[in-house]
Amino acid sequence: MEPEPLAAEPHPQLSMVVPAFNEEAMLDTCIRMMSKTLRALGKTHEIIVVDDGSRDHTGEIADRLAREVPCVLVHHQVNQGTGGAFRTGVRASRGQYVVLWPVDMPCRIADLKPFVGCLGKASVIVGCRHQRVGYNFLMLINAWLYPHIVFYLFGLRLRDVNWICLYDGPILRDVRLTQSGIPMLAEILVRLRDRGATFLEVDVEMTAREAGVPSAARPRVMWNTLLGLLQLWSAWRSEKERAL
Image (cartoon, rainbow, N blue to C red; front, side, top):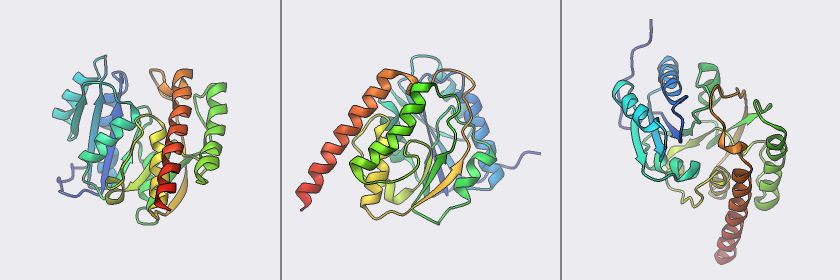
């Protein structure tokens, strides 16, 4: 027997933000599994789907899901990248905690437990992948190098700066984010750190996506990510100098 849906609350415990760009093969399964998992865990929640200017049938599938599964739906007319979609989801969120959850990551009880099991222990619960499943050689090199670059530029030492985190909602909603692509994930951590946020790293499993191609596998995306990170560092350093 499936658990009964939890009654909607003005301030749910969890806001799950799901950016979706050309994810027609995965979106339905992801949202239905997420809804079932959250109900099973007994957490009051909201699911926010951001259709990020998809050119396939993702928007139509999202419209149908909004009628069949309790979720909030926002459409971007133009693709704004992972960062832009997450900013939209954060603005729409009401939860005590906010989680960015990729469509290609299953949301089973075992996947979410490391995060919800640490609620209240830190401002940010950082998911750390000990194994990168489905990564090609170039992606593995990039995955090793990226946290080292973030540490060198910003002094933020975390094992994983590019995966699922659970953020304190009120603090996150008060942070001004500038990046629109993947570097926004590092920007959140840096800006929360600068505001005195505390961090707790938890080990999580990563599973290979069942369909489609991850955008991070494209060399152009990797290059744009590096450029975005350097732009962020330049702006962040200027902010620090002006504050002196």
